[in-house]
Length: 305
Length: 256
Image 1 (cartoon, rainbow over the protein chains, first blue to last red):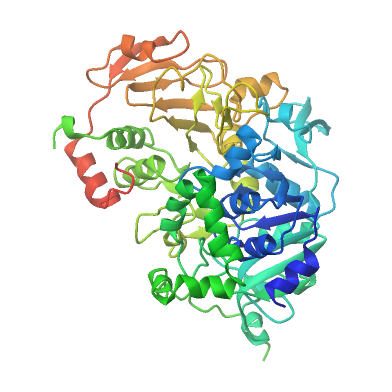
Image 2 (cartoon, one colour; image 1 turned 60 degrees about the vertical axis):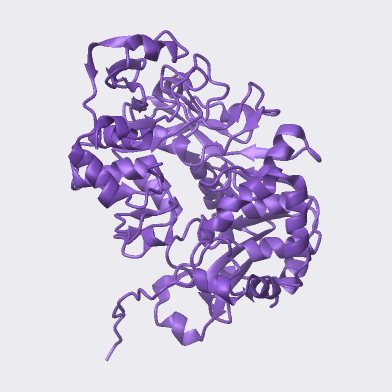
């Protein structure tokens, strides 16, 4: 499926869309296609709301954000996000703040269709005061000292669609990820529909030669999109490196609304699809992010004689 | 290589590294905590395991990592685990001895704010990144070290604008049982504040040479008390500085 068709089919105005990928394998190309297709009023769920979220905010796609970290990684601030939150400029943003494990537990509860999930976070924090979804329950079991234990719980999240980026999948959607695996599998299982964007589609035999590397089985996947370099400026372990210069430059771009508008016009609206974005960056640019080989040694799964 | 030429990053890294003596597993972010943990590895804590929030345990990077998720942390690492395992089993399961945190604001009990500046969360003066995993590190690491680049009245405050990551005192008040002791060390350019755990406030425990207790009090927003045995911190040694400059961060990515 092409990215254009996948976004057209699975992302609708008003939907709740989860985009996961913890620094690694961020589904940037999917975010850009959502911008190109002009989606409105989305609830975006993303643990580390970073550059692609800032871009989607600037493009007017997002009315609600659910997140546990809003920043440009370690390279500064998100200009558009701060304008929205601090000055309601150009309009207010509904924002739900969690911690990382709170978000993880929401995905786990969502994936397992549980009504809530307990965690040892939030005790004494001001977060429950601004986020009524964070609630406390009394354990039905006695604590270690025989007393009644209280604990915070988070509600499940079931996005309309989860989009993740991965290194490779087979044609039916068995998806393999290595390196940082984040919370992608849980986010996919929590969703009503799941789109996996991959660097490459490989033969069934490749996946079946190493089944433990399949983090997301085909039964959880509704569509596979082939989109090489679709995680830029983040990275795909073994395929290309992180574009640290882009991260460093983003704070200045996004701080200036005009520069940000120009950036979107040139790089998102001004490219037909991600292939054109990749081509526009140029081969020399991509050589700068190339990585060398560091092959894992094969394991022996064995076979019955 | 005299003490005069030591930068603030070098000073904080060296002092923090010494505090890791004898520790087994540290949860570290990128920047000063990485430098401190890497230096400790070469000096006072050779068996130290550095765990990153991204899921990397036992990294052996070929280059200095630029982020907690840098590809060089993955290649050659001893383990890379999914986030539910990292936060659920490793951190909440009680496997971390020391967590490193930073914050925009800290109060006398070691509670931290990394969410907003201004007293209205809904209309903040400045929106900061938020918790990330800090709330969980505070709740679950056996103890927490805070490294603050700025030691001034805005950061060391009587009243947090917002509490993102509460220490155990606030948690207990809320009816929750925290695993850890919360913040036990705060390392700054002026000195070290310390507390042992629940029920104690941060007190001035050590000063850098040339800094007086009055200097620190003047830059701390609460009535800072002093421990009985206020000591002077030994300046970074030539050996520590050489390791830091030549082995840990030769390109001075974080040693600015």
